[in-house]
Image (tube, rainbow, N blue to C red; front, side):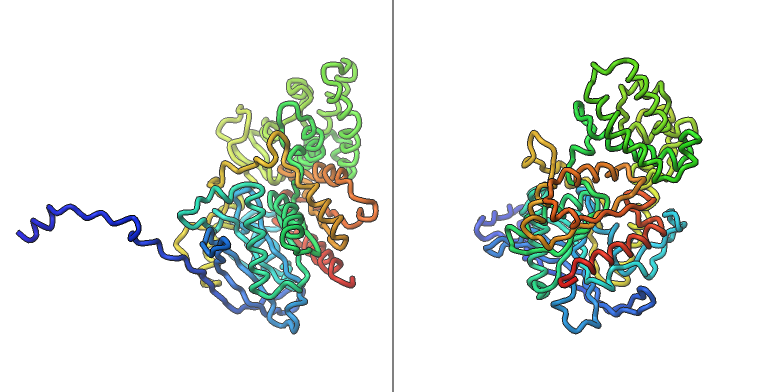
Length: 495
């Protein structure tokens, strides 16, 4: 009877004031000791993999951000050693690409051209790491990596241009304070949308937190989204992508013989001159473009893009990136990569309008995912059963409301930061085969920054014969390391 009574008895409702509260989340930290050989020198360092809680001013936790920090051990005055905060883009990407591709002390082993080796994959000592010249902190924004919003907080409050800048900025402030690094020279390095974040942070850190930076490193930059959005009525991307179309066609031997026999840089100089002059004027005229001039433009576009004159006519002189990667090698039943036009893909439907996947992302996704997950648990001894979100769509829809009825453009934020802080230097890395953030679009953005002439030489640009992630290509990786180290050193006080 007792058992029956227990079964039949209705559970009592808990008073809403006495319901158990969820446990307060705790920060997790794992510290390990390692060495890395850079430039023939063995460097001892401490790796810290952990989470940092972002709280409101009442102390209530809102989000847990995962990070990995590397600090060199054989340094007498840590406060004077440079520190660099690193992140990737997406939005929705973890920091894995810069972390395991170029900046961190361990990197995923690829072949010299950037192709992965067969699984299982391998991590190797990264002789191109920046740890010899700066300490490093890799940040995963909310909903990427192991970073999460803390219930009952909703993750969407962190998913937006301004919200993202504030949360990452708060992480940088808190980390800098706890690590006693306010006196250190400070740098940012971002890739892709991470460059958008970095430019936004240049203003936020400076104006809201009083944190002045020594330098910002932009890898595959996009600051003005008008330069890359193929929207109806926006002709700018058609102009700015054309030199990269030419680079892709040159790489795949699709240009006329006289161009194909020239060096890539010479070809690009010719294409850029055409793009910013005759092509720009033609698109500006629209339907008023005379037939004779139109035929000349069609011929030149076909010459530089590797596409047929018939196809150029059908596009109304406007080649969309997503069509180009499908069209260039259609007769071979092959597509090319958007992140890196050097790589080929295979679609089931060769007659389709767009490619089924980006082959230049597919070749790296598996290797970087496997090695990052293994590395965190095996070498850094950080344990979590959460899925490590390498590149997630869980951040959509991304909030661009600040830029309602206009394109996202943080170039003005960067100009303001450089003007108010005349010691701030900027380095920009461009891949010739990058069809995601093409180099001519980046040049256009900086050419229209309206920096004072006295600050023009505070921007340094470098170019690499690879794509969006130019560090996958080993010769470009070596050059990028040398360029970044040179920039960092030159941007230090007294240099």
